[in-house]
Image 1 (spheres, helix red, strand yellow):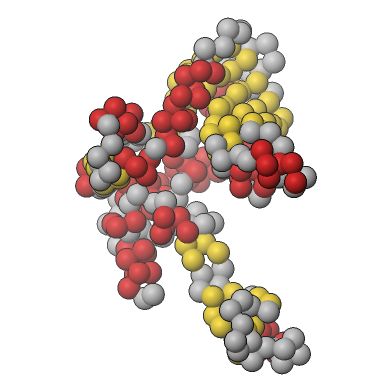
Image 2 (cartoon, rainbow, N blue to C red; image 1 turned 180 degrees about the vertical axis):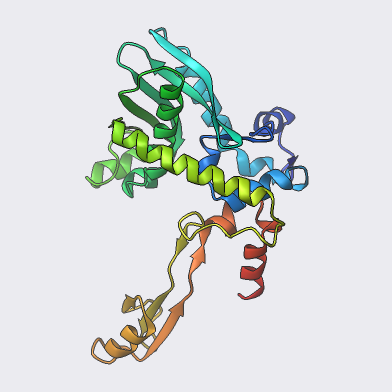
Amino acid sequence: MKVTNKMNLPQAIVDAVSVERHNQKGSYSATTLLHGACETVLTERHYDEIEVDASESIWAIFGTAVHSVLEGQNTNTLKEQFYSVDVLNSKVTGRVDSYDQDTKTIHDFKTASVWKVQFNDFEDWRKQGLIYAWLMTKCGFEVKKCEFLAMLKDHSKSKAKIDSGYPQLPIYKYEFDVTAENLAEIEQFINNRVAELEEAENLSDEEIKPCSMEERWESPAKYAVMKTGRKTAIKLFDTKEEAEKNMVSIGGTYVEERKAESKKCHDYCVCSQFCPFYKNLIENN
């Protein structure tokens, strides 16, 4: 992956955000399994062609700094341990930030945005924690709990004072117990995802199934009842028929379509330029 430096930032920053290839051939990390097979395969296949500017990766430095500080804790923990388990014809791997041998707890350190807490958007962390727990269990460890400690990089003390629903502190703890049912459930997810990845590896770019709506962070299309002279919608509906049916009764004069938007494709997927789905999306919008 080529890291550009359009803002002419100090070389130290460019070096800090220039990371090595995440996966070895035939190996998939816990975090990789959380991405769509299309994104994963295209990123690996076109890795040397992908360009990312250093300015867009600046938060990675904060994440690294947080890890460096917290890894220095002097407790009965295993830090930055690497685990690998064979799945089908591949390996699933994970590097666990910290494992407390006394409480059988996995600790993972994150930097995150406030919105993640406000929207209770923790499904990816839950899956990541369970994959780590599954890996460690397969390697002979007992895991009773997962705990994620997030540093909220955009926290506002002034907003916390006036909004009780806003995170009150710049640090947030997300935790959950690990059960046998959880491990069985995540094992099924792992097997299915690895099978999907192995199949996609043998297909051309055009043949790979696109990422799911959830994986693309796609917001569904909406139909807005509008009123002439007013810029904002009176009300949004899921279907055009529903919007047209209610338009007159709520004081609207016309219906406007708000097209579905794949947020990850547009702003956060590094391989989008090589993705047939995204190319088609751009051409038709």
